[in-house]
Length: 360
Image (cartoon, rainbow, N blue to C red; front, side, top):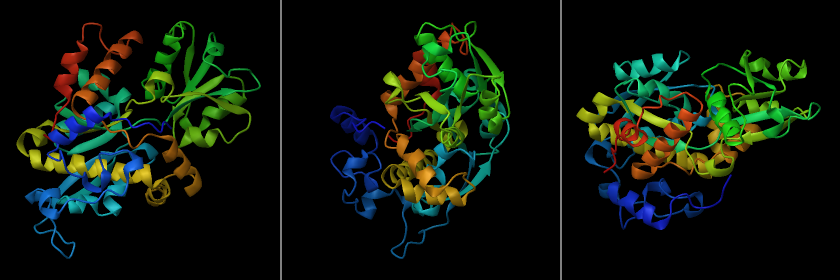
């Protein structure tokens, strides 16, 4: 994980100005890098708007607003949500958040958010951007972190680099997976046509390493926690992740809210966004604590492994505003290369349409 500050000073000042915190310490360091933990908190009257204020005894001054948040309980990259719940951060911001463990297709999840069956969700940008191109009334409000996708090869076969995958088969869990989209892009950047020079073959997610062991595939691509655990097999080797090279400071997971909530109840949309970011700060600075909480929600793996996974991800990187729109636009340009996004889609206009600034 990179240790550099993802927000240069000018970017940080602009962000804090939009959040109404310029010249003040950010709450619990939520908008800072992990190295700046320990900043004194703001006084209550400045830290929380009226909708989020709590009484001196820690109970909400008013009734908590009920919110439903869709997530995947097996995806460790969404750990900021259960951390925010268990640490009382949602309640501090005036929210009573109910989790909806969503196992359906991405289109169904986004439709659920757009139609009000859920108020928001956390998911991977590379899985969401194509459905959002189709016009769902869902708005991205922040990046949550980077990292969590891994491309894994076989030492015995010699598939240990991107170049070695030309002409080979890569095992994946589904043809629309973020892993396929991202590593297809990396291959294209290496001059390997991800459609003609590589075969992508579907297997049940838990059986991906078996496909490599049997020789039916020479590499596999998927997300943590599976891929991290797969790598405990000494016969396997990590080829690349979605923090490789130029992607080291790119968000992979985002928070998106239903459009009506953003338009009609901006204070609640802002509170939910801030709470998730504050949860993400704890994940970045206290990965073992976050691992223990995530494990209690059914996360697979030991506490040590889960903490290591979270430590390998960039939970201190959660861009908003122009920084996030730039990242979205870059993804749109790149997804055109692998024929996921229409060539006619304008990246900047797309980013303007799907992003909502709820913190200014």
